[in-house]
Image 1 (cartoon, rainbow, N blue to C red):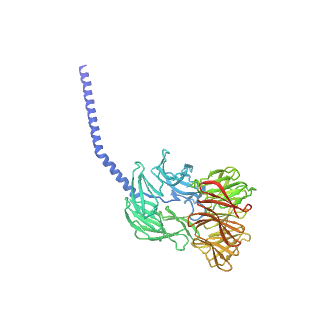
Image 2: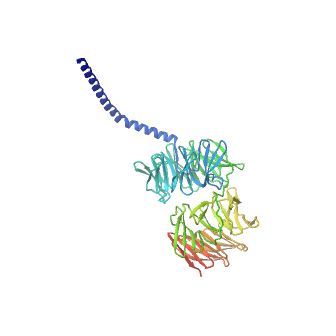
Image 3: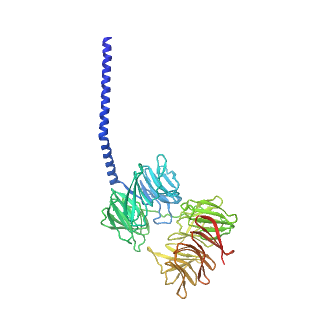
Amino acid sequence: MENKGKGIEKVYYIAAILLIIVFLFSFFIRDLSSYFGPKVRKAMEVIKFNVLNVEEYYSSLEKKEVMVGDTIYFSPRGFTDNFSLYAYNTVNKKLDRITDDWVNRVESYKDSIYFLDAKNMLFRIKIKDKIIEKILDNCRDFQISNDKIVYIDTQTLNVNIYNLEDKTKIDLKIQPQGFLFMNDFIYYFYFSSGDKNSIFKLDINTRKYDVYTVNGNILGLMYYNGKFYAQHGTDRIACYDDKFEKIWEVGTQGEYKLLSKIIKDKIYFYAESNGLQGSVLMSIDLNGKNIKKEMIVKNNSFSNFEYVCENNKNYIFDIKTNKRYELPDIKSHVFYFPIKKQINALQGYKMVKTGNKFYYIDSGINFNQGSLVEYDFANKTNNVYNTNLYLNDIKFIEGNLFVTAGKLYNFDLEEKKTKLISNVFVDKIFTNGDNIYVSTFENLYKVDDRELIKILDKVRIVFFNENKIYFYPKIGDVYDVTKLKILDLNTNKTSELSIDIDLFNLIYIDDEYAIYTQGNDILAYDLKKGVNKILYKGAVFIEGYLLSKDKLFLKITDDQGKNSINCIYLDSISCKTLVREIGYINSYLYDEDHNKIYYTISNYLDVLEVKLK
């Protein structure tokens, strides 16, 4: 028993000694940690910063093309009128249309493709299973880093942070002109009326910020290899250190230079094409030296890719790998067309009238989302429909309401929602009764219930009436204003009008007179006598042309900032102001049967009327 007790006592002694050793060791480790921990963390930060400097590149500019594996995800606005999102497999040459509506920005992050659609909704496509899911509403100018999305909310115009992991959102309550998001920092900037511009560096974790001052407004900002590169106006590119002290600058006033991207220690930018078809892609070294012409491209791109055309074939060229991929023909489509109805209507400028109801676009109410207003004139009541689109025109054709917002939509009067007609880009919409015509920047299409029919290619439409289309042809990258051509829609024949003046800003033309703008004046040119007559002086901005038999109506903003609705009487070639408003005139319409002007002003939903004398 005595030996057993001594054995137990010995075990206790050993256990006590071990506890003391562990206790002392923990103090020793804690001291080591307190001494070496900050140094290790600091060393890791240095390593992280150096890796960031060498390997990572950030840009605030809007990309529309990304490549993941063998597939390019892109919006082909470089060479078509179609801005939908496509996936092109460069190995099997397969092209898939991912969206019907067009997209505004495309980014890749981890295992997904992120893109913005025309209604400011942010979507994500899982590359593996091709599943599309909506991430955010009211999103604009998004950038992704560290599992966070920084974007501008289109309703508040504030910068928000969205966490992809826990799906939380933080409103930073700042409204910059632009921003660059990289890791834990947001660099944001504002436009300035003076020579100085402020850049704010915001730590999103501590909410502390530093302020830097540079010369000139910033349109875009990039980070590469420890330095920042800024686009100042449209003619200067500057390089800065991390404190925004200028290192070098290139460009002179009036000499076009547009920052594009940075790849393989080269800065790429666009220069004037000087009459060539497309833009000139240039490069410059990181030290601001050795400017070099790279290639002629069809459109500006801010990703690794450029669109080029060789021997009438379209290619997408990867600057990073120096590879080019021939693309198949990409055509626009008609997805939906409403059934024709027997409903009569009056057409106006951004306004239509059917019975006692008016439908008009109000850019002064909730402008970012695009409001379509239905106004009952008899009962003085209204309904405001948020289409979530940037509406710019409205027409009532064959009993259906059509709106344009970069594309053509039908606004269903029963369902009270928009339906996409086609994915072709729409600059203007015309009608000559039953037919719908839409013009892009270069082409004219006829829209029917089955397909888009191209009527004119590479032209600038300057005037459209019921039977004739007046246009200038495009030669290379320049419109030939010496040849005003006329397409007769009845005979499908083209003729040419010999004239000595530039009618690029044509408002109206018939067999006797051409009415056009020159500077701030509206002039009538006698086609037979070859003389001009001034109809209006001091017109800073002119829009809203509306023809009604022998009257031509138009909306003018004068040199005092006032809006007015004016009428040019075609029988006497004279101009008279009918309505003058201090506020902004959104829309108007002329009712010939009642000889009345109906119009709306910003921030006021009612339709106003004026009886003409």
